[in-house]
Length: 168
Image (cartoon, rainbow, N blue to C red; front, side, top):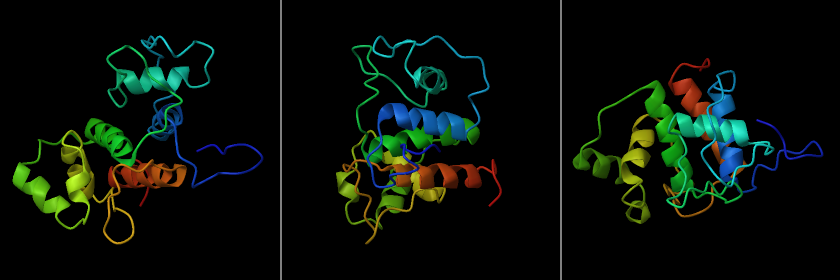
């Protein structure tokens, strides 16, 4: 994972969609693949993140918006980042969908589980079950907060360890 310039990592800085795409694609070792066509009108060929966004999109890790835009400079929430990490996890380790009962059981230990969006519940529960997602502080998921560079680094590291792509 690259720093933010001036020999700094900026762990508490919120992460953008383009930065997230780069980190996940590089972390999974996908950058050596043939680069698919970029389908987002707001990702110019000259953008530093064009290749990683195209690859992440090709593998279904990231998706654009209904208007055909990617919005690469938009910061992402924890639940959005978790869903994208879960898509990467599913590429490596496909699993059947969790039952609603199992999802409820996995989320029950978190005081703010009710604030997880319906579209994210399956993926949040999946990463809890896989020990990739550990929550914050007092058993909180904090799904609506922006995700930081440090949190993404930790999620990707746990993803790689859980799937045996790197040593534990």
